[in-house]
Image: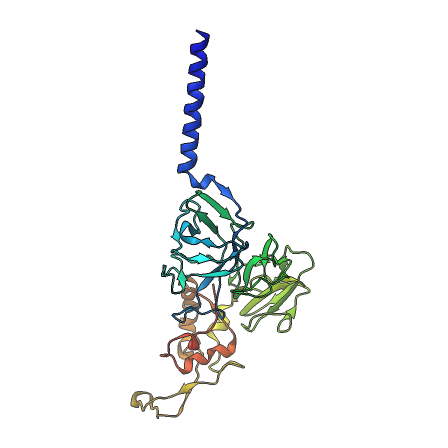
Length: 363
């Protein structure tokens, strides 16, 4: 009887071990490890002016590094930004020699020709996301020490500091080369908070600005331009707002990445109705007429005089003024804030492409 119980217990143990092994084999997400030979060395998730792919696009990119002397055949590896889909983008049959680097564009173009630039079938999220290598044969994920990685910034590389295992923002991207030894920043300045929300106002307010980062200095502008340490006013006390004001601010600290620029539009509708045709510092004309237009009494080559005002025959008429103000409040609206100099786009309203695009803040 004792022998039978012993055999039964032994049989159950063997079955449980077999089931556990089978589950582990079918669940690669549970196998997480660090491979010391093949590494995600660095990447750029917001490529705007850096490396260009074969199509002329500023695609984001990921760099792999073989940290040992032995070559590694990548046909058994994949890249993924989804822990539930570790085999998302498989490498072609390509060998990475010891000490070599390999660049993969994160462009979502999905190109696997080993004789051409490689393109993964996903893009990198600038807000931060998961990123890992997956070994198909061992069914193990190799994640970075910083996965999911944090928010990324324009033309900034994120990767290993030199040959160290720690990850951070690097001083400069180095595709195909050893990483920079020094980090770009010790940290990131926290987002700004405003004591008054953007919107419509008809009474004076005093706006206070805050950041949770100790030792950070706040700089602001009110003319639509981007604030900086050399191009903005240093915030020292509450900012009085008595008329339409486009308040933009950012916080800075030495050896830290500045906070994102925050924009709050405080709109006084009486100012909008009374806006002059030629506000100070705005472009005085919108280019020139490209051809004669009898209906406008326009002559080809003559300047198009800028006109920024609302029609005074309506805006200044007591019969319409109050209904206009109420109507402007009731309509869904967007505020587009940019540097005054960017209004030169009116000169060529039909042009297309990046050369005619201007950065704006959308509220």
